[in-house]
Length: 320
Figure 1 (tube, rainbow, N blue to C red):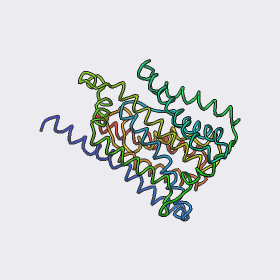
Figure 2: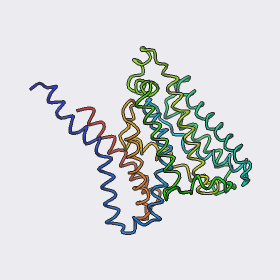
Figure 3: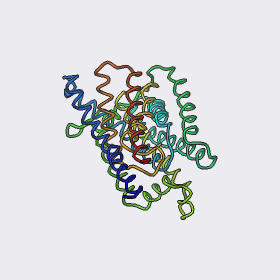
């Protein structure tokens, strides 16, 4: 038996563990929540879980696209917050002015996505540094306007997007399902998807094969920004006002859902199905932590531990 055969045999169980870990973790959390918190499966709680899954999932699909291209987008929460500010300022509670406000929010999101792409692709700034700097800049402006408190007036016409239900299921979850399905088809069945995987797997080889990797990366950041705008509209419709604190955790949540599900931070590995499982796990875990009375710090600690475990298993699977 050759050393390569032995290595391959050792790699298979670890790789399988990395693949099955998110689904196993989801089942474990569902059982633990039922045992430790008997009221967890109440109708109100389940609706909150489904809403959380929809909100996190919309941003996580965009984050997945960026990660597959070997990037990262830490400006998601800032784009969400800016969207709510723009809608509140321009519509000011008037449903008739809502379409124009949404158009301005989309334009602002595209500008931020273009800035991220420009910094990363044209200037060569590391994605973490570029997108985090944009996050700080935009979030600072939002905090200055709101002074850290709830502010603004969101038109009631936007409420169905955030708190509406269709067939008893929250609208955000339907939106997430539709977006995830489209993204899965594009990534698996189109040349655009193949170019994205090639760029994330080996950028140099992709360039040598004629792929314009800069355009691929730029498109990923634009997609992520647009989905963050949609998540901002969902959040605004749900809350009914601008809250500087509300969207800050979405950067970590969108990243956590993707990584926990199995999308590689090094690019080129993973798919939307992984992200869907990660979103479900994170939504259940978040609501369960709230039920247990864990504060923001406790929730962040649990999410961080889940990211570390998922990354470790994935790395062991690729190293062995």
